[in-house]
Amino acid sequence: MVIGRMLAAVSLLTAITVPAAPAVASAAAAPEKCAPERGTVSIAESWGQKRLNLPEVWRLTKGAGVTVAVIDSGLDTTHPQLRGARAEDVTGTGPLDCYGHGTAVAGIIAAVPRDRVLFSGIAPAVKLVSVKYTVGPEGEIGILVQAVAKAVELGADVINISTRAADQPDLSNAIAYALSKDVVVVAAAGNVNKDDGSPLPAYPASYPGVLSVGSAGPDGRRADSSNPITPITVLAPGTDLTTPWPFRVYMEKREGTSFAAAYVSGVAALVRSRYPELTQAEVVRRITLTADGGSGTGTGKGMVNPLQAVSAILSSEAVALAPPEPTPLAADAIRQAPPEDTRSISVATWIALLSLAAVILIALGSVTIPAGRRRRWQPGTLDNRS
Image (spheres, rainbow, N blue to C red):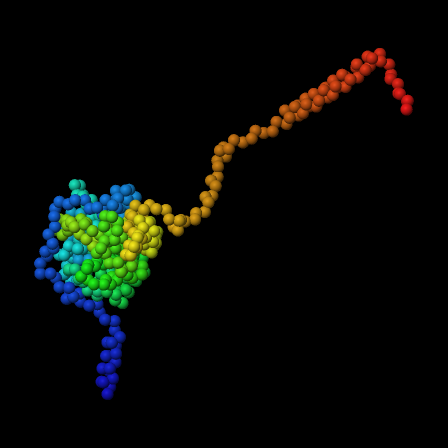
């Protein structure tokens, strides 16, 4: 009986013990070979890069002082424009990107400009961190949750999640945790095609507080492949794009909200660098208010506008400043009035009085003298006639 009670107690303790993190190595097996789609060496300038007018934006900020975490398929840190980035892995397969998606997304955000290369990232001065959570186009939510926690642990100011998942409590909690740590979370709205049937909202893009991004074409309109059901914050370039690619090459004709989200993550980094005092919610609000304006379902506030996002003066952010205290002036800064000359004032007063008396005497004389002459200086008489 005693032994039975002890066993029951042990079972109860086991039931309420917090479970250990799942072993991630078996959840995403390493690929048999690292063979992403073949890229190209020579590239043309992407229309998205031209549209966002980066040279003018970089006069104000390039994203220095901001850490951006890319949760994706890994990163090729040997790429000439991505050297120096930090690569982490929560899959147990190593941080190398054998799919290409993660390198492309990271490059849009943070690729460093190079001579004779017609491509650069939106925020080339950021500290880039890659957190690998998948080895291919699909990933597991449990590992994605671990990747979000890892990104927060690494001090991310902005987290880019270019994936579409289903709504799960663990994922919702992970995103809420990141937001509570003042992290800007940017997520792709998801892609659809005619064979998918009715689209469903994408997560984490649909969670409150997440900066949800749809894709647009060169005309600024929502791309047909951009999910119109997911609540959209802003649009960004998402068709016919050029991106860096594993093995030191590039890839053209990329399309999807994954890459649009990367553009907006770069803009979020620029805003955080330019206005470090803003909270994550205020950064999202600034990006939203300065977008070009949306029209129709799935467009949000329209195309993101980096230059306006980092330069616009928003009345809601104005800080009332107390009027400055007057600066004391030096003793000789103001010319002092000369001392009063009392002697000169007294002399002038007497001269004025004497002059007035002389005028009076002259006036009296002009009347009395002629009259005296007419009477030959005899006294006059009174006329008593009535």
